[in-house]
Image (cartoon, rainbow, N blue to C red; front, side, top):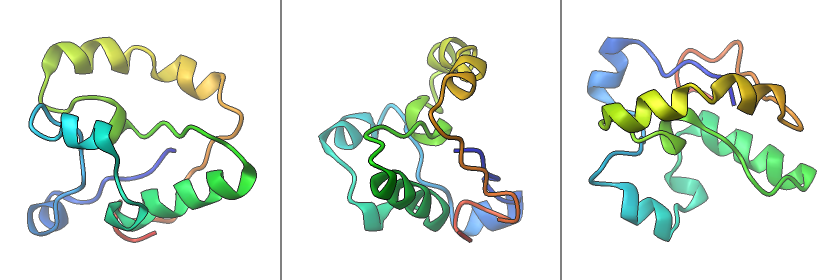
Amino acid sequence: LSYCWGSTEELSHHPPLRATVATLQSFRDGIQLNQLPKTIEQAVSICIHLGIQYSWVDALCIIQDDGLDWEKESRKMATVYSEARVTIIAASSTSCHSG
């Protein structure tokens, strides 16, 4: 999924769901579809409809407050996108919350 997280102002009022050291274990236990920001929820729904079992979302797949994890995982982004079955681009979305 390629999308805009949102403006600094919007995210200060309505932060995105993101993987952090504190949220990692609860995310591994599972995230309900309705807990996801709208743009991510819609992308996951599309993947389910297409029979795609896994979705890669930077905010959820890279531990955002772990510099080492971010450095390691962000290097893989080109490979993730180039080997994806499908890439969903939320080109007209202004944030992760707008769909």
